[in-house]
Image (spheres, rainbow, N blue to C red):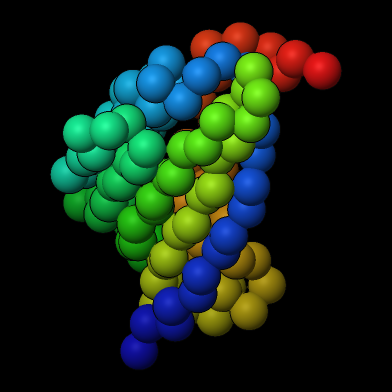
Length: 111
């Protein structure tokens, strides 16, 4: 029986949400996420991780908000794994890492 776990994290990147949201959607597609959707107002991006092979599956939701000259991104992932390794490593963190490995923000964080 699969074990489902949630993972939440905030990160701050440079640039505006309207610039970073499309970049995040592109990063999800590059990482192999399916059903990538971006909201009309560019404040939320969602994707599903469901590879053909493997024991990890789940989804990620990114919410964008302006933070001065920067963008605050709230990342929420929910993932399931059907083996004992979930006791050692968070599957949600693995979904998060698949996104952050390819995401390149618009600019460096400004002070």
